[in-house]
Amino acid sequence: MSMKYSLLFFLWMMSRGLWSQQYELRHYVISADSVVEIQVLLSDSVDYRFWPGNYVLVEQRIALEHPSKYLFVHLLNKTDRYALDTLREGSHLRISAKEIVRESLLDKDGIPIEEQITYIIYLPRAFRPQSGGIWRKEETNPDIEEN
Image 1 (tube, helix red, strand yellow):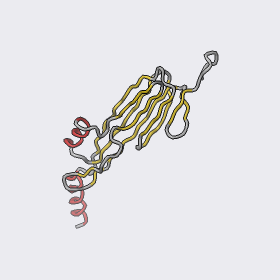
Image 2: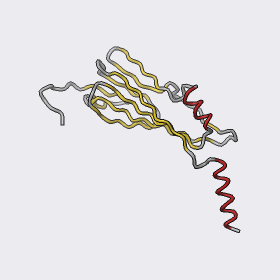
Image 3: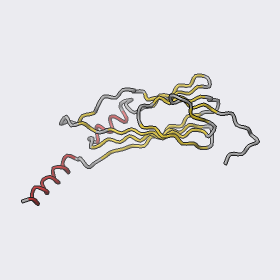
Image 4: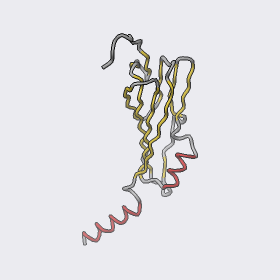
């Protein structure tokens, strides 16, 4: 009898698609040639890394638990739900989400869809953290080599 219920539970889970996750990676490349200060205004999980060069690379991972394929494609391509906004004013660069507040997602049966957005931001090595998501370029001595 217990095997029968286990099998029914397994089939129910499979029909609901509760074990599926859809995700997409997006990359944004932003020139930082004359940028002295970068402000990052993202409310999701953000990790910072350094790399050589004069570009900021933003890697965005969007993951939804058991959405319909059509909903996922619609959210990615037809809305600004995951779009980044960059504003450059002189030597200041601001990176933020276009939609700062995102409403919760529900599937067709009213069940919440778990949504995880994470960012990895690759900054040029010359930038150092300040407070409030601000990174400031540190003047480097050209005679000193970086390791």
